[in-house]
Length: 66
Length: 256
Image (cartoon, rainbow over all chains, first blue to last red; front, side, top):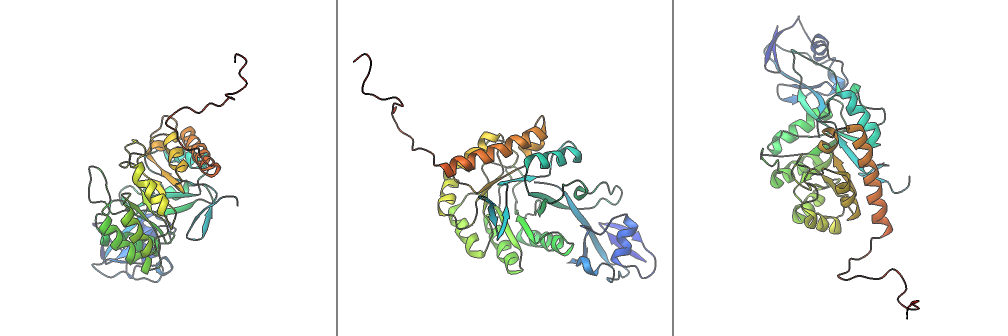
């Protein structure tokens, strides 16, 4: 199953969730910020939020800034 | 707590807020945050580079320091609201340093878009700290909209030019109903002290510390300057005089 994450096409397993995507990317949940098809996803819902074929995901996080 | 900075009901011992950008390394950033004794630090929000995830800044920040996400890079109210919603949903605090900046040369904020975003975000329950040009009329509108602070620039971001907009900031301080935090443009600790002496509630410093020869030592210097400036403001600074006023008695002169 393919999704577009941060502009890059990713091949994921069957019935992936946001949590599984973050694991695949090597990101721990605290402060991994996720937008799914333009809508922010609540951190508490990462484990239950399923990704669908063709979804557009943005994964962001806090970085150094002023 | 003696003379705390109070923002939206939350007390901070330090009146210095620091940014986390421009340091030579995350290790030096951490040392500078500790040396600054600040309790609130700004962070930006960016997409992760999938090819190089790198280190998380949050792993390097000292315990007990509160994160203040910003909307740097946003050019419209819609972009800023989107970033704020993303940050909060992902577990960052519901405080947002609101920056809406369409101008890349001087990085001056768009007051109209900032106000529009502030109204939306306050309505959604955010604690909003807007970065603004020191415009007393805009200040009143942002206060009426429910912003927790007003954060005027002293000079363009990163310029190190100091308190160039002093007279306008004095008006903001004089009529303020929420804390005035001078943000951007300070280059030296003396300039931070000057902000505090005129009655600003706090200052936010990033470039002047991060790019200093010794950022950790400079963070400590800014901390001392902010404390000294605040103490001087509370102590009551004398009025200026056009002419000299002798400090020694003018009667009983030995030579009279």
